[in-house]
Image (cartoon, rainbow, N blue to C red; front, side, top):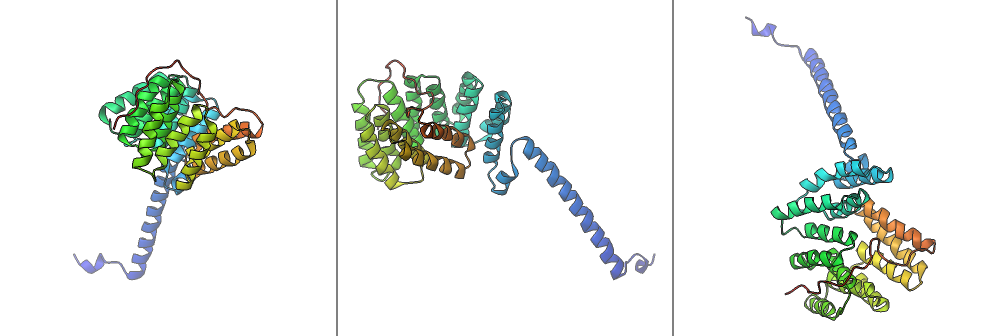
Length: 301
């Protein structure tokens, strides 16, 4: 057979090539639309995808479901991420505490975290998640043990040191050993915001507000981008009846959380901001009821 009969003239070749590219573009567009629909169904908004932060999208969806009173649906969206995140994203830790609490399913959340700790015992965020759940269950003496483990893994984590400081204050009794622990940590790591922040939270939750404010100022001097510090500074100023100052720090905490892609925690801090603006609230953290004294051991080392 004459091969020249099978060849195409250049003009016809260009036409066929253009048609082929057109159909390929249609197929890719269809795949993108299907992917976008799937992402939206699991909470990945277009804004989150554009910033390359799918977890922020998930949390936006979870927040909307919680606002609509659909806590069980929010858990269904969040749970796969909890199981898949390694190491655990701290935003998921906070989202888990809020979401499982809204559904009244703290025990289910505890079981998930305990199972994950079996395989990832060095993940500091898992231990903090366990501690936060116990705090919300008003069991600071149990939470204390989990934050102790978190500090032993990472004493540079403000959430670990802050959680430990708060739990230690809520368990009651003599806080001098805990203060000595933080002073030792500050001496060893004088530029560590986490060390001084933990001490500030311990003082704040023990009612020594003026001393706490001094340490919070020190922390902001070291790092003014920590939302936890701004939030607790706001709480301290509420207790000192400086609500205008408190509002400024709460507002900054919300901005930092929004910038970090954590809409759930941003909404919770915004609630404290509204209370300060309305002259309500006393600067006490949500779920911060005291429990009977127990467990006084400080982290070793």
